[in-house]
Length: 318
Image (cartoon, rainbow, N blue to C red):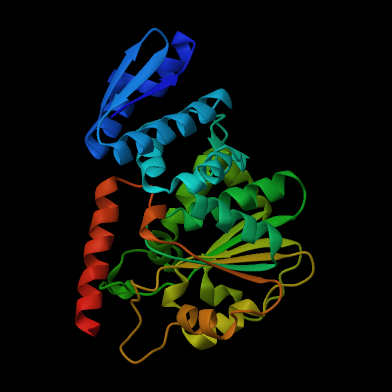
């Protein structure tokens, strides 16, 4: 079967095809179709269902290009995973700018799931984001925190993680306490460097506008007018989670992120994140968003690895 799609301008066609035609090659290989460009039109040949899917993918790509969005292979791979009925939602999600980095790069959701997560954070005072690595849980939360600080919606950003040993012992690391916990906090530093640049970040830290600290430092505090992010929350105990969730005061927003498949707590200790997701589900002004492997925006092999582990875990319980 053949389907024809009129594209128009040569520049638009170039943006759709991508560098070295990698976008088209991705569609051809994934759907087993053949795409030919002639006179501002695309002709798609292949089995009917695959040709229709390829046409819909090209239409979504064209919508993104018309909005001034860059379309790369990662975007194409994601568009190929969604149903035709959700293509409009995908275009809207991929066009939503959350924050501009200090280098001028816009930070945007890359999947519908990421957009729903962002909306949940904006809508609720407390939001939980649970899911596998690579889904943007922490990065998007940091982007929203920086945006809120720039817009004067909050007066400071507080980022925290539990310092739980993932197979290594803290005591054997060199240096003082700060040197020992810094490796656990490094992903938070990296995200803020990306958004603000090292110089601005250091200035904000010195002024106390940005604070990055282990979870234990939160005990006994009341945090007003703050955007507070608890990362790697699967490694909190029930008591630590309750302590953290009762720290925030007026004008604050909390985001809790974690991956319940990567718990490093001692045997027999229930994860505070797992417990909180159960007891707080349905509580007003608390949002819960669960990511799936389709929201992974790292190398496509990461999705396949997660899928393989999920299959193995299901086999154990059956």
